[in-house]
Image (cartoon, rainbow, N blue to C red; front, top):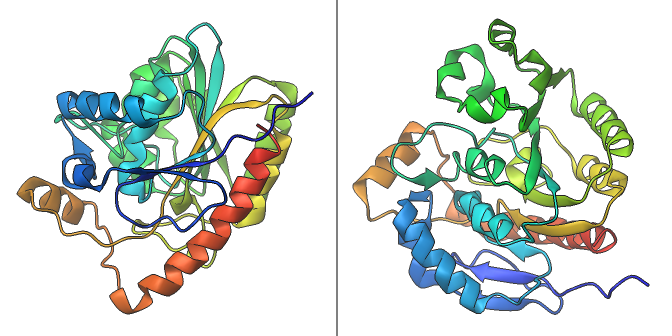
Length: 292
């Protein structure tokens, strides 16, 4: 008999997640400046301790607000049963495997997860960012790719540089999202494994869900098709990529955010965009519950 769906959890860091049925709300906005975009490893450990005290033992889908908090997937995955091998599937417009010398940030956490002993493989799907193109190849952490612990599934990105390093089979590029989803769902049916699912909604076209990062080409039906194709039950899941406005107090966060070309959020549009996001969250939550 299937266990009843566990209630979602909202790590409320930026006030951007709309009301979800039965959700447990963890009020943690005092951590926003320290955690948002990136932080030292020591800061993340302190936050992880506070989070562990507040989380249910086995939470439902965890919503964490803006994609600026995507690195919080790392402690959520690290706390899973170390004796149960899993795959991690990440919906994201970016590889989140980029070099960051100051600890961990929302674009560097994937290599940390790939290094966990109970994670067999990480699949980042839906990438259209040039972060995995030749011009940024040197910024990617190569170890998880060389160790066959990480695969990139992209749309329209020239990744020919991977041939020179003998890792071309870890790169899967497609003409469009339909082709990518068809190939990935086939892969999942042929290689079923317990799965942790992490969704950054910047993978979506802005017409589906507007975020505060540059965005990909997925539509909601692409995400739902992938979730439906997962043969094994989900062992955990999180959702981020909400849209919110924030002015960093730390100069280095302001500088790095500017270098990453984060778009300026129009306050007049914010409420409508958050309503759009909320509708997507409800659909994702329903699909994930059917696989949990």
